[in-house]
Length: 109
Image 1 (cartoon, rainbow, N blue to C red):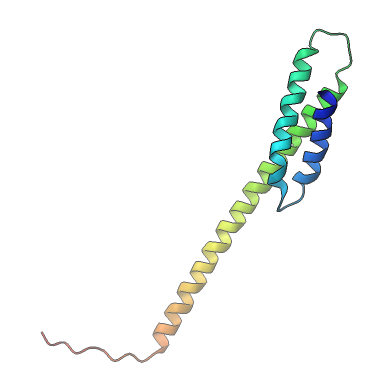
Image 2 (tube, rainbow, N blue to C red):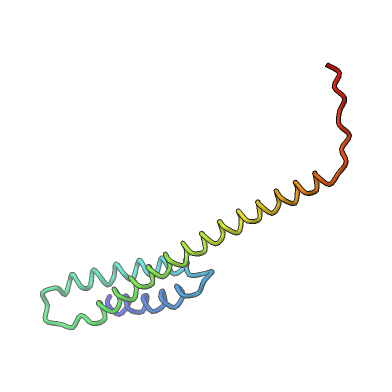
């Protein structure tokens, strides 16, 4: 399980740095993190090496952090670009409405 954790960590960290598809690496990162933690808990008192398990936990943790940072960054940029587009649309619409000569309706009352 420790080697699976490390392999999933490598895959997750590679895909985590790809901007638009990084969120797809979240599932392998979480699964790899669980595998690594389970392996470390199982080998807690054993005299065997824990290097692959530690590497898997570290890689998957870093991948999750990178995915969260990329996601927050893109959500913020998307929100700002949508708000800017709405502002530009409103300004353009106001300019077009102000440029036209509208006939004012007569008041009958």
